[in-house]
Length: 534
Ligand code: F6P
Image (cartoon, rainbow, N blue to C red; front, side, top):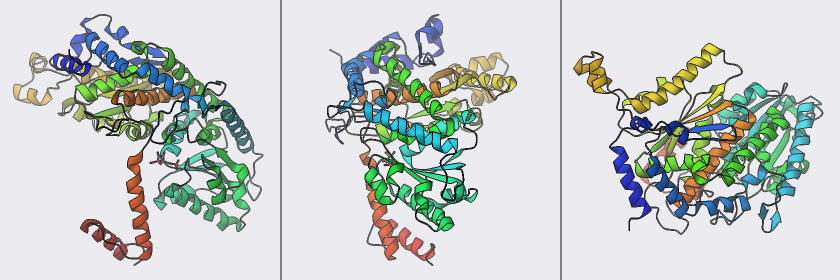
């Protein structure tokens, strides 16, 4: 008997020989391959997928135990066994739910307490009762964090830019490149600036160095260590480390080991979001994610948006041979979405061992990349239309835009839909000949089409629809991890580079490189000769 993987490979061989647009011969295709959930409209009809192949993908999901694994996620089972933890980001968006437990204890009370603390911090800072050391009102908040302690909060703050509270600007410094913090602080006044040191582990060297530089900047102005308490907050799953670092205990908000860094914007790591858009805006973001969670937990697999988004990705990666996944929001407010999804998907699913420790057969996470439309039409879309690779695209668009005049929005929307159509239908030599194109030139103008895409629409980009969109991709990532039988919640691969960097840093401090490979030793010697010490 054929295995499900053999069946899927056979469907892929069959479908690859046909045309994607021919699948629309079925009049119901657009409706059949569209799912509406939590304010999102997910059209996956432009995937090179028919009913038989879809059914086989659903069977694969079933064989990999997906329904039970979805329950495991919500119930707080140890879905991250290499670190011995659950991943309960869904509990963060459902603080009244009592079912999420860690070590037999419900997590709801701690989540509710922390939300209450966040609400009062926001009220004090945005309301102006919180004062800097010199008695001034805070006008600027700088988040110091990297990876999950940066990308999600920055994306959300940027996406909700029209809802920002008056009088409070939120900035982000993530890179250890001193130019990053220098550029941010150049325009700010220490007397009116508040820092949030965001680090789940509180051991991340880049964030620690930026925090030390920020402390020095405050102390340069006030020359009084007591000033730190008025200008620094910290968020960490290890509050004592933040206190040891010098943050006032009352200013340390908790998050927890059972929240993965890249899934943490819903925790106190989201404080900059709440400061930017108000605590109510943050609650609306949580509500949107919660609506997607409920859909994910209860909808049948075939009508489940995160599941089908994941399965279209599995189809393209594992059966049609796509190496990458392009993310193209047609919305300037979502410019940072590809960066955020790079960490979410590639740090979660860039793995080569199954949970059982075997080498994975086939590919895991595709390379996630992208950019904002229409800009990218004038950059990399040429490759999508006439290059040699299969590149699936996720298009993301809000149907209404509060600040974009109708002629602008009509043109944006027309371009978004047109690109998806053009990628699918292409332009054949026959069509070019019929239009009278010179045959030699027609060879260069031909576009093969057959490039698959998803279209994700929302009526408006609001805190709710944004929350739903991010939860959709979180769950997509988890579902793919289940299909690949990997752990989506650890990231051991980042360790070695960190360790080597620490060793090289010591060698730089000592002024002499130890023995490395010839290239590294030469690079180190060159830096020591020409870098800032010379
Ligand atoms: O890159 C590794 C990583 O641990 C990410 O998973 C995480 O989001 C980032 O570093 C920052 O970690 P922390 O919040 O502990 O500073």
